[in-house]
Length: 115
Ligand SMILES: [Cu+2]
Image (cartoon, rainbow, N blue to C red; front, side, top):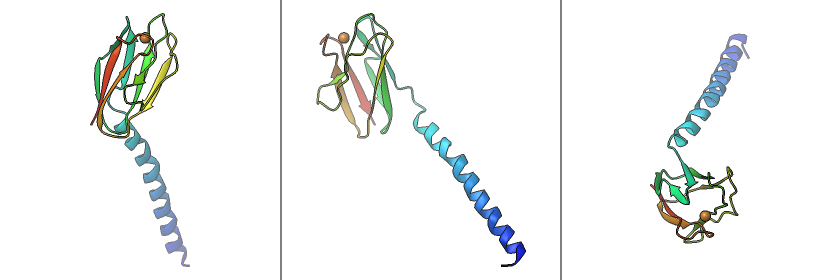
């Protein structure tokens, strides 16, 4: 192989690798742009209703001194008891409206809308 061609191929491979490295984190950042945190606070979920895009992970964080759970009405997701300052996350891969409640305090209800 001529030396010049060899060097050109190496440069092309290097450029492709740099593009791959640069493109990866950008795609991840676009998916993670929307806020996807729900607080359990004062025996309520806040916000009561949260809209996210398909593929987003929602994290529930308990800011009360009592444990709470996050249990989907349809059975799609179910946390264990979430203690103070602990969290539970679930990734939503299908569009839909998902109602949930705390199994310990059934009046604590919330909704995740996945679009
Ligand atoms: Cu609760």
